[in-house]
Image (tube, rainbow, N blue to C red):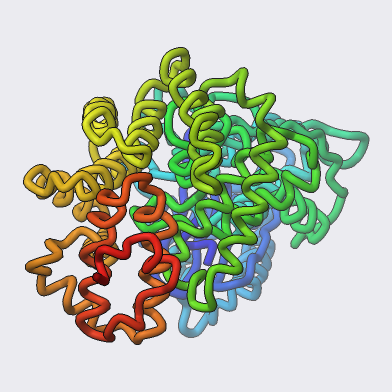
Length: 540
């Protein structure tokens, strides 16, 4: 696992990592340790020096005398036998058979030869793409004989961050600002400053977000004085990671919510940087811890309210398979959370716009308040694109399609190409165009909406296809559904979109395509009661 997720660089001493193929292993910088499958082995200072000397002369037989000269200090009196002893000890740790070696070969009468790949030249070191960087590691030399323990802690921390966060983690022992291979992590850095704490290693950890540029987690640590494989340091690293991830997630959501809609900010604050939809469960884990720590935080209450709304949106038909009970229960919790945050939200336009959307979603009786909050946020807030997008959606829901489309077109212009925010704007715009019967304007917007993710067309097409001439893909999607799923899909589409339109003709336009597709296949009994009541003209 670690070999595919974590790399370790040290620019100052030209140290490097040896990649020996699947299942073989990787030697970490300074040769203080090696990862072999799921196991980590550690080397003494003498063993590390011997590995470095051999590997930097890969393919070349070094005599015992040459090795002694290279690895011995001025006050050392190593002998041929001590070299043999070190080689045998390294072989035992690596499981390297002297008769069929992978790493160190014996040349009888000559010496030893490194059989692995040579170290790359310094100019060959390439920039590393990473989500997280553990480093720089400062003060390692202050630890003396415990330096390997400091490096091990950094490695354990990187491994735990990679496993829990799902990101790519790079470890740097030292940063050289002039280096062309400098790592620029996408999410955050964890700087470790080591010092002697009595006889044991001490460390100050400082975590900084690459997005907000804020330091979000600082802690002083006292590590145990122990020998390899440093089990206490491993436990400490693993225990720290959930707190680090939760703190980072919160600071970046707060930062990004000022320039993007909150659901986009919550997506971008996760470790999932692919185009796939973010896991709702990933955010739920982070929020559960944050809410336990700060149950009365109004901003966190609003974030959690939108998180619950996100659950409804991304769950698709699943939440509606057994009726509306679960959805209505979630609506009640959203309403309670937004009300608890409302006083704080009114003073913050970037939060007020989110509160406005959620209030309208849970109960149309909040229409006047929702529009007042949204207009005020759009008139005074700094997140102009965000407020335009959400106010545009609210205006579409409340009947002013022309004003909605105008605002959404402006938000589209301000959105970064291929961003999640632009994807949201295009969805809102398609909603408005379909509801307003402006299908002639739909195709270019729908095309870009579908291009965002391979599954987007499959998800949206039953709702956005021409209701009189449905596409082959829309009909195929319907053929793949059971009656129960089709019924749940209609409930879902009505709850998050069609049923939110105030005007009967807009509701009918929004639901016409999916209702026709479902009725054509399963008959009128497939239409849920709430949909039949909302759009009776479609069944007349």
